Length: 166
Length: 166
DNA sequence: ATGGATGCAAATATTTTGCATGCCT
DNA sequence: AGGCATGCAAAATATTTGCATCCAT
Image (cartoon, rainbow over all chains, first blue to last red; front, side, top):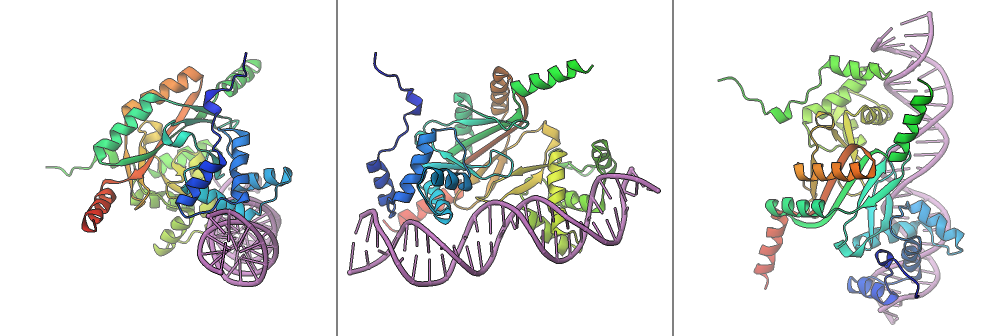
């Protein structure tokens, strides 16, 4: 039987595609930009990295890219819609691989206690968002939903603690 | 006929209520904290201010609160659930008055061209969020949805421009 | 060739913190 | 009174920018 590769994680942009995206917008595909993006691809979708994280990861892999360039690259890759920017952990500006060009919308559920982030998709929410946008005459580019609360694991943990010390 | 006051905007916490909320959590109601919060109440809900904005506004009103204290107050008021924190304009950490203690959830629709922000509510989205949370065993505290795109006004403006120069 | 991109370091901007003093409870 | 809160200034972070040099197109 052939190896199975989860469809959802096939998100490798070919170098050619990357070059085209950048060139079309008057930018260049430099080794640094490639390194930054391929880091996100290596880690897979759902990983949230700060500029500093990216810088460290790259340094550890022996691929040195200056922090300034990391900042510039992240900003560019966001405007190129290859990455998404968000603040998932309190006060940290993070980046993640963008999923299939605004087709696959995914949302986040963040535990305020342990900071664990789960992702999910919801047709209902996407549809509802489209409706709202349409009524308002808004041309929708991006739907981002974040649920915050306490995850199952943390709830059970605190429940157990409460029962131990009644 | 008596004066009409839009119900939705009655969001003035009394000093007593404030004091109680803070004291219960072991904090104090200081003039500074009151000033910060009352600024948000003066401007009304739907206003997004950075720490620096708050500092300036207060300074202009003759009420001086040190920037450090503004930072400390904002952080505290967020944990007290009196304010909400978010990044609506690219790269700016902003705060706004929290609406009716997690009962009235409101979402944001941000125009990427003119940065104008509209707010809206959606029962469908709220309900769907609750469902997702329940299925996952997640105790939901906060639902935050942000739609990004181009607002009607900007779309019309660019359409008009396109027609002028065919 | 040539203009955008990078690295470095310096400049800015943002946020946090130590400490003496003040003031809410 | 006692301890949390403030102001100030300094420190720690985070992000941007000027400029000489490099390199993708």
